[in-house]
Length: 82
Image (tube, rainbow, N blue to C red; front, side):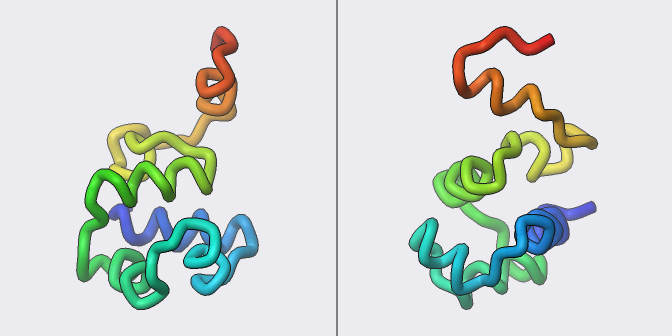
């Protein structure tokens, strides 16, 4: 699965519109659409914003990690992942 597909899947899973993602991140809706369609690849700063919003790792967004783990949130909070 490509980055764009993952971004769209995560947005839909969280019941967010592109407009809401724009409001939460400042990423323009048309730019977000280009990311989701796979026409453009988000730069690292935008990947970071989206990963934080969707509570996933950048590795997951990029397809390096194949599954999302709730341990990501624990690591962010400084807890030991088990």
